[in-house]
Image: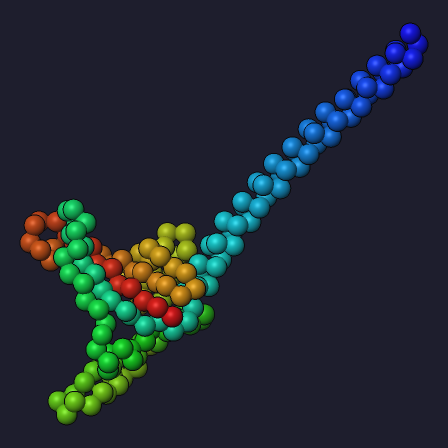
Length: 170
């Protein structure tokens, strides 16, 4: 009988230790999960701001109906000369714009380079150029930029301002 009592006591102690270890493991796992989520969000905001820095080329512009979000027009940047155009966001808050056009002799000519100041708020996703709101950056990765511009213009005449999105690639 004494052996059964000792065995029962040992089993009770082992179960208690296992329950304590299980609780400790769950608490540690939760803390790790919460910590990693917070760090991921912090890094995402940093990364998104940093992703804007670099040279971008516009690939297309799309106009969407402000009423039903249908596509009103897609304008690819497929002109060989205009494809040379770039917008370079520098880390010092400068935006360098290089544009090109085809002259009457069918020669690709560079327009004078334009340098502007910009700010980007990674929380609100607002891009401001020369103290004027350009629009919202709705997508920003290390190679893709989508800028939704608010021109307050009704392209299709339905009484609702339409949505203009410019697409860029690095």
